[in-house]
Amino acid sequence: MTAQTGTPGSITAVYKVSGMSCGHCEGAVSGEISELPGVSSVKAVASTGEVTVVSGAPLDEEAVRAAVDEAGFELVAKI
Image (cartoon, rainbow, N blue to C red; front, side):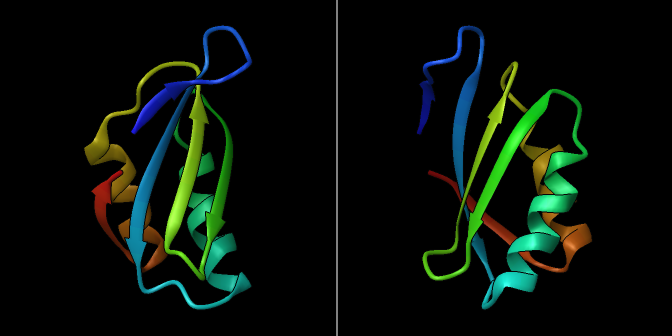
């Protein structure tokens, strides 16, 4: 699901990530994705496995996948 947010020019995308089980996991995934160009915020929720990313433009899914892999987790799908 990709939707416009209240901030003009920003895109919100939600991804399903497997393997997150705690706050440390959330921080690792958030930290890696937040380093991608154009990302303004990231919220990872271990209990649901969902990661919400707000960016200035649509992100390349392979770049997001690589960031999640770098954190030690698996990107399952874009929701």
